[in-house]
Image (tube, rainbow, N blue to C red; front, top):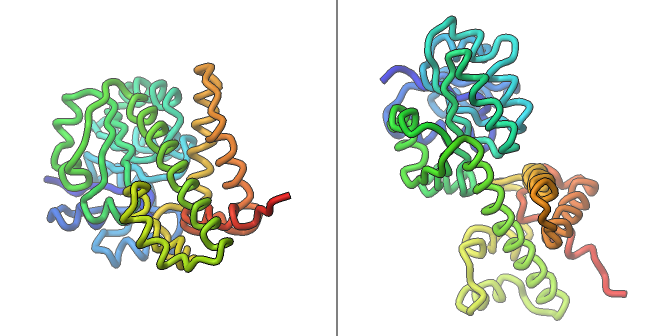
Length: 293
């Protein structure tokens, strides 16, 4: 097939490039950050100078940007996919975790510009995605999903179709809520064990063999046990962005999220302490800073 575009080459974008390259696909990639563009080129992508350059060359374009606003700008803004495609049909595959209501509203506007919009937020860390273990949560037209199968097969071999655009993001937010609270529970357990004088590395092995074992422990446990947060698979500030979306959606739906509210405050504590760019396992530091009265 023709070259596949990737816009946004941070953690998730780089993981997608690895998967696409491994599937033998040609990749044209763009990021506003020159260093990230250079890193994408080292992974085997051809670096583009703009979104427009990607859109002019690629029918299928994977979006790995940070916010809902950035997705909207890339799809329908000046120099965006809709404008740059020049009337040719394009498929935008959005892996970003976004506001589901705004994506649902964006999809018909994008289609009017010749851009078929498919939301595919992926459950899993960037490392899990690069290893082929990410799970795609798809919202959009089934026919578009089938047309995009070569790209989806490469990025997320395991995936679920969840109905219309918006449902993928709703599912991702609910999944990430459970995932984040699992990290918080593990962090509190580690802080408690440490405060009681236990060796956290040894405690991790016991916990993994016990009834409290979870996949989160396998993925993040060693980082917490050793307080090694520099090998980033998912950032603190990204988690905070997601939890703010959860709280907004909960408010709209009339559902209080008490644990999510506490967790968001702890993430804000990390950001205020300069840890926003650390791996989200650094939620441990927010717990460790708390002292009993």
